[in-house]
Image (tube, rainbow, N blue to C red; front, side):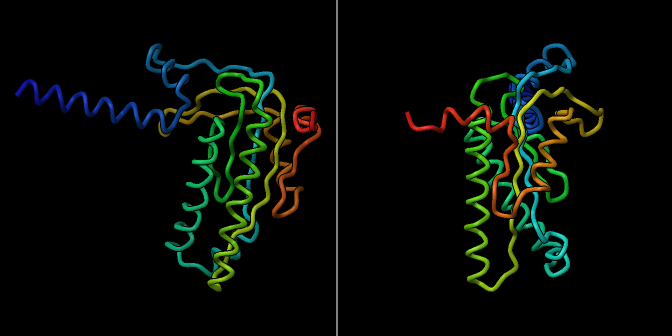
Length: 203
């Protein structure tokens, strides 16, 4: 009986740790478990990505709620797999917008390249989905993607449904890069370009 209770207890603990890692970056989750809180930090260089779907409102009027959420979930699940593959952190979704960042919570030197690679893969994923939808005569998403590099403050906010988030002008600029970009294109700022231009020139 005791052994069974222990096994159930361990199962619940593993499940709660898994849920915590779904919400927070691993390093932040470890700090939260160890100290009961996690310090907000200033990070000098991160690369922030925003995506947004063109015509989402129009689509929401032609699709059933179930179809709309299914299509959105399909896209965001693909984005989740892409961010994980490239070692960047999903920050959140806001309606039909998706936000991620590279170079945090642990700073690195590859964040700009990582985010750009992820952005091109996201763009290609949506383009492929559009082809399939067009062929089937169904409504489709098109995406705008914006990227900017700079400093941010990162930390946990909230008590109920707490979340890991980032703040600063870098975030606002990345959002503007997305909204001023063209559909089907990845719009990167000068700051991000400056970080990757040498890496992309043939040597």
